[in-house]
Length: 114
Length: 110
Image (cartoon, rainbow over all chains, first blue to last red; front, side, top):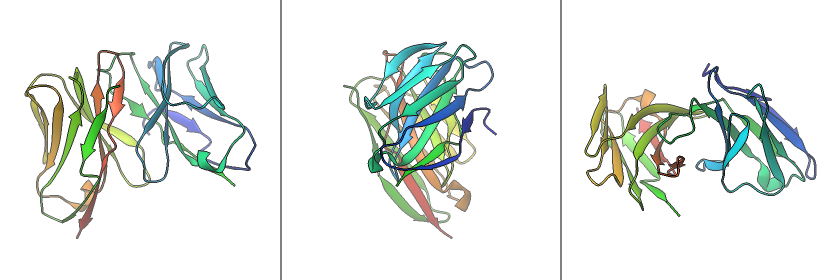
């Protein structure tokens, strides 16, 4: 157990639908990062939050949005889902916002769009 | 923008052989991190290098950060089946975020 909790572990949904992925960071960590990993691919950075505020944005589609709540958990919302959105979505957390903080990853949510 | 390239993409070795993956950045890095992702698992932080020319060892794993802070390598001596997985480097920049390389997938013949 890494200390970063992601739910659900698996999600199967139809095209056009909307889903919400949830992440609870490791205790004490203020930064939350979302990554997308398609089959056998690398880690695509989506977005970062630090203490409730958006800090950095990657190649996140307009159909996707995220937020970090006062209790520091974060949600990633994916709407108008397409087949190509099928992937493993990882949340990671770190104690700070600089590049010298190691990331702790959750076990991921595997999204399958049918 | 900043890019972090990693080679090779795949490496298949006989158990007991050595393995090396290389990471190159288009710009000078402030630090480099290495992660390991086992098949079906999530990335796990291995180590961070900060100083120019820094070398760190973890048992059979040796990590190096180049003198110019634009490249890094991970070398595994005498691979074991437990080393199977994908190794990612992640370069830190002054923009305070890290950029992950594309990863090197290591498979091992017992």
